Amino acid sequence: MISAAPKGKVFGSIILTILWICCFLFIKPTLVFDFGGGVMINLLLLAAIIGLLVLVLYHIFYPSPPIITKLSLTVALTLVWLALIIFYPFKDPNNTAAGAVGFFTLIGGLAVAILWVYFFCDEVI
Image (cartoon, rainbow, N blue to C red; front, top):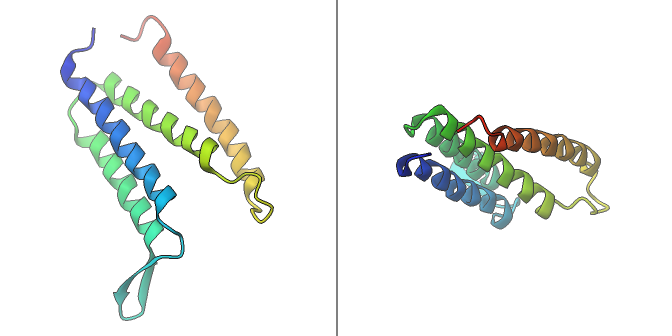
């Protein structure tokens, strides 16, 4: 049985992952952040990098057993995979990368399925 303390890592991962996904949904790709001196960075790229960094550092520095960290990362990967399936414009005629993204979405689905089989087997916890 898992104690109550490490479950917080999984719930925190869910919240951080949903916030990271919202960066892609609600920030327009045309917005830029001007640092001055001619240095400009796409705001969506900046938010995505900072969000991913926060998510990775959260998993590294939150103390928990390794199995909880693996479960938390699996939940995060599942949420990102589902968001990609739901929100990516595969049928847009102007999207030339839809075939490649579709292929890697299928491969990601295989990875998600294999990871959940690992956690649903009887010998993990």
